[in-house]
Image 1: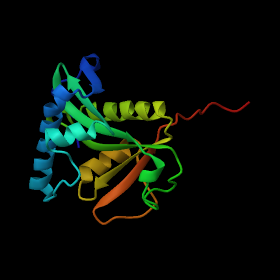
Image 2: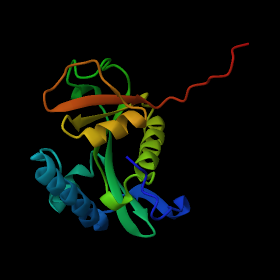
Image 3: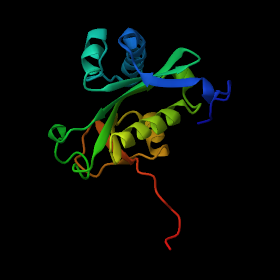
Length: 184
């Protein structure tokens, strides 16, 4: 796949912030567009994705719903949740005792894909996870979404060796920077 070079992005014009209540309709529109595309191209129903403003309002209390804008236009969204020990489903990830942040509802507008926005979002999500004292960023991807899986592997996610699921693949990415300097 070739990189979209029609319009070079000026990263100084990209902003990321926690979505305000007044912006939840922007988040909703991005999620609905993605859900519609997945239904049409893969026949997938999108369980778990909040598609109404009321559902999003409820989610904002537990999650950090992030909104990415380019020159004031909403171009991506994702949710980050610090995983509490009592939320863990045993066996899904390799080591459930590792402090983790969960990435979900990650959507980049099609016209902004292959331009670095997704990678930039993952870098910001990793930074957030570190501020929460998490060692890993975790997510799940529908098995049919080969493009999404290829992207996740490219930005450093690896499949978890825990429980497999027929519909989705569980992945995780270390957010701890490696020090590759020689030891003295």
